[in-house]
Image (cartoon, rainbow, N blue to C red; front, side, top):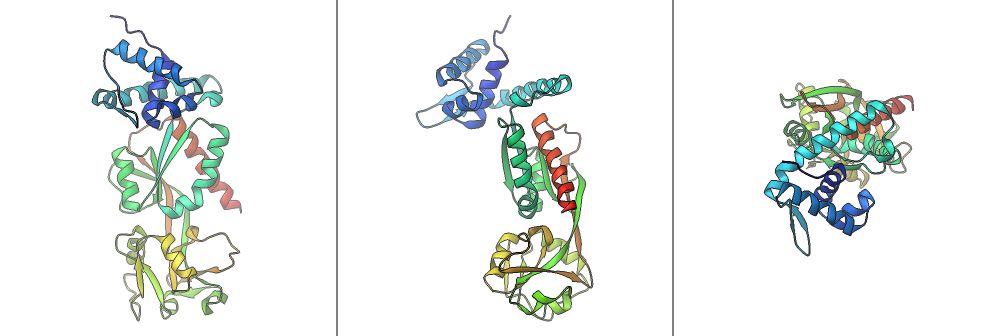
Length: 302
């Protein structure tokens, strides 16, 4: 039996599956919506199956369509890899990259990398999942994310880690706070002031609890929160000071915030790329990973 469909039909299928819309899919692959519909009809007729459930409001994959999707992605990615080996296919490169990233690394690394990827390969789409370190590790281990950007420690056994940089923890405070004029401050000194901390669901809290196992503050925190970005917002509002990873701080100089390195002990964490063991990245994911490494090098030189 001969099945009559071609590469264009598979690209149309992937575009509709990823966008959930015939209109958006047609815009992505730059054809008219009727032409896109004809490609999908041709593919369904060739396979003698229904790949999409269509309503007036949404388009979703059928059970058969969901099973077919990974095979299509694999075929198109293999073709993209072959094209990369024989020439520059950047102008036509498509696909979607899903990256799981802790919020502080997302703030520091991702904007420049995503912007660079879009400029070089405008037809590649990026999904950015920002979550806790445990959620990032789980997304990479399960295959829900192509790769992740997080810090080492408590990773799933299926995940391997490659360091991009080491960063130290600093005290975030307002510029009108007494500690803002210091060049360094000890943990003991810092925690004599009103301070905010992260709750036990945070990966950063785990890093600090391990590093400061022998240190007990003289008084408890006045507030706990889950995310570093919320923590910094509370500092900016004047609620208290907080220990945060240095890359989470806004660029210096900031009109309201200052960062003071912490010592006794100096606490650092390794930030890097997480990959599932044995998984080969798609061409689109490889391009984004390359840009993240370039971002690390550029930042090191700043």
